[in-house]
Amino acid sequence: MTCKIHPTALVEEGVEIGDETSIWDNVHIRWPSRIGRSCIIGGKSYIAYGVDVGDFVKINSFVYIPTGVTIGDGCMISAGTIFTNDVTPRATDPKITRLQDSGPQETTQDTVLGKGVTIGAGSRIAGGIRIGDFAMIGMGAVVTKDVGAFQLVYGNPARVKGVVSRSGDVLMRGDLSGTGALYCAACDIHYRYRDGVVEELCGETV
Image (cartoon, rainbow, N blue to C red; front, side, top):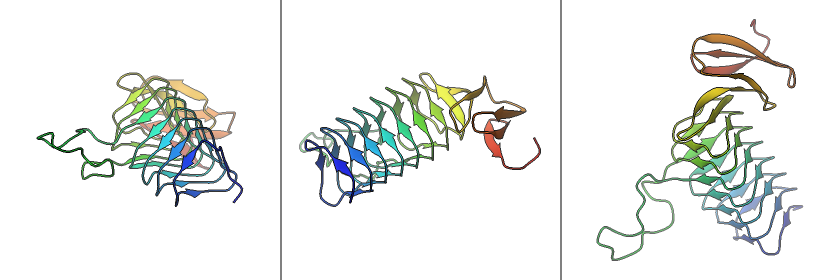
């Protein structure tokens, strides 16, 4: 295996790590998680039980990823991002006689990021949602609902503010009502939006 693990990182036995992945200082990765190939896990980040990270993923410093999160290939998770996975968390049982187990519970929610997603620095991502391929979440956003492919969202709560391409270029700003055609010169791809849904056009008529 050709991965690089900083001597201060704590990677539990059984964690799967792909080739050419770098894990930096004071990272903690719990078993049984999987980290794909050619990834970077930035310093002081925490990855919990059973998290699945795809290939070519950048996770910056101070990122918190709990159980139930799946991250697709080519994603960017910027510094200070926090994912959550429970809307009714408690530290103890109702009578405060024992701590709740820290592992997966019946109330644990799954969150899925498609490929190529960017999460801006300091964002907060609610549990139980899906973020579509190549979506872009602006810094400091509080995301509480699903985000569609190629959508640009930001704010608290995050709302749709436009369309981005595979390259990250902002192709339009505003709501996505109605129908329209867009083109990105950087990635040489045509896109179409229709009533809030954005898709690539592969050889279709614009």
